[in-house]
Amino acid sequence: MPALQALWSRVTATNPFYIRKLGAGPIPMPGSVAAFRRDVPFTTKSELVADQAGHPPYGTNLTEPPDHYTRCHQTSGTTGNPLRWLDTPESWSSMVADWTEVLTQAGVRRGDRILFAFSFGPFLGFWLAFDAGQRLGALCIAGGGMSTALRTRVLQEHAITVVCCTPTYALHLAESVATDTHFPRAPVRLLVVAGEPGGSLPAVRSRLVSAWPGARVFDHHGMTEVGPVTHEDPIRPGRLVVMESSFFAEVIHPETGAPLPEESEGELVLTTLRRTASPLLRYRTGDLVRTRRIEGRLGLEGGILGRTDDMVIVRGVNVYPSAIDQIVRSHPTVAEYRVTCDVRSALSELSLEIEAGDGPETAAAIAAHLHAALALRIPVATVAPGSLPRFELKARRWRRLG
Image 1 (spheres, rainbow, N blue to C red):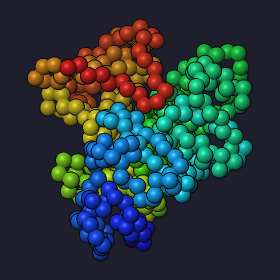
Image 2 (image 1 turned 90 degrees about the vertical axis):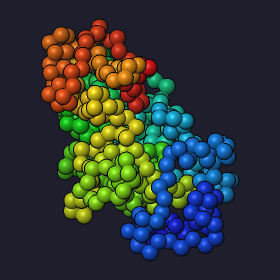
Image 3 (image 1 turned 60 degrees about the vertical axis):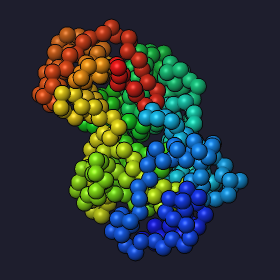
Image 4 (image 1 turned 135 degrees about the vertical axis):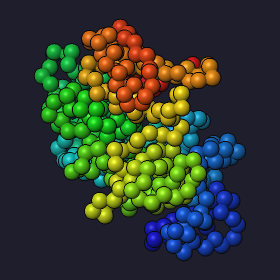
């Protein structure tokens, strides 16, 4: 409780957003963890969006004076208006320390050469990872503003040993490497992936390992609003460990908000303990997880299972994108795919397009696999190689009609 008490003291003294939310005047902290969960209201993304709209451009969730903030990042805006997020040097340093822990657990060391294969836009994680790599003494190479072909050359010319990107882009980059015969293959020994659930899905991990022979896959997850949250359990692939020195984590029922015990499946709720300059108390992340504590460490079994805002109901069946991804990626001939959700009629319908070397045979196999797993008949069609979009950041394979 000491870290939570210190956070509470700072936030309730100077943070306008939480002073309004929790009540004016001295606000005593709940006397126990159970009371904290019972008495402190959730913070939601919609509240934060409304606060920034009402107090542009940064809102009022700021514990320090405005001139103390030196960094501004923002969310992707894939599920609504993007959030702008400010950090002081102190709060930024605490998050770099967490990312340094991620890379340390992955096995990054001094002398490694890391390619950060993404554009350095306003998103938080890219910059944190780069700073953390430097803190560990690795040679850090920014891949922003480069085409995939150019990044392929950088991999080989610099003898890159670690690649940091999304799982989707790692597969796309491997395709490019395989077709470039001008240089010997880079000695990549480690893929640090994030930004999508795929890094903890067995089928996606298997595809990554096949695409990058000899490289280890290491997953992690975080959010702009809270920073880096987990890293893969080094001895239990497919399990993410919560960095509890920086977060108080809870699991709740996604529909009722009722608290759930550990060993439960539900929505992840986080309170930031060290990012006090732009804090969050009981933030509903929208991430669906299954928690389990092993050897004293809280973990997310299977990583991020899905998102509450991504689920679609098809003929009475709850369908998450991660379930479709796991099924499709278990068929190794599929290079890329796209899902269409048609909601123009009373009953939603799903259909898939795939790029696959053996075409109709794989399409039929995936359709059968989907039917067996989901009890849904979902049409699967083949399309020409290279006709579906590739993604550098979060893959957006789902499109909505209606």
